[in-house]
Image (cartoon, rainbow, N blue to C red):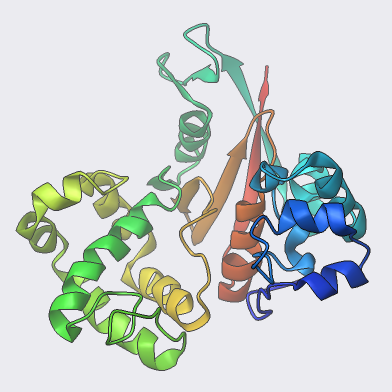
Length: 286
């Protein structure tokens, strides 16, 4: 199974012809006649959702998935879990008449499927949040401001601000310097540019504080280090629930839907390398 250690190469026209694509396919994939490569390596087509190719003619996309052996996002949730080595726990729930996708919570109120699952785990002694990767992304956003103050250039770029950073331990060490300052002074960092953050943070500051209390600073630093050493996508695809019981646990909540490619990528390139406890909760109508 591919991991974050395998580079995502850009296949050329010559390679595409070699593996079975004709001129019509190439015209659909290489919209610009001067372009010599496309963005996604054939090794990754299986893990890429079909909607990523929505501007490509269907016949070409079908051929791509035939070559790669199918599309991960179109497997059943059971098959997806088996492929990724994830356990599925079933949670019974009662759909609410308040609206599509809403469920009756234990206290009689209504909420999303993630709220129902979070209530289920809280009843079993867990604490935690349902913020996906929004809280971690918010910490990274605030870190960008502190990083720039420390090092004089943008987070994710080199010293010239013209090129993306070169992944590796040296750059990650710089990121962790400013990240430690953010975690030690979160409210002060937030208040210093509150109006700026209000328009950009995807989770309220209170949820970010709850997330930090749940996972601890060391987990956050490990994730950021992994991001800037390997360019791993630690924010996108992050599972719904972040839980603290005897240990740290991450749970993706599903009802009738399935995992997406970015969630599989998070498991493969973040959760597994970092040794995180990950699983799926499937909510079924009772």
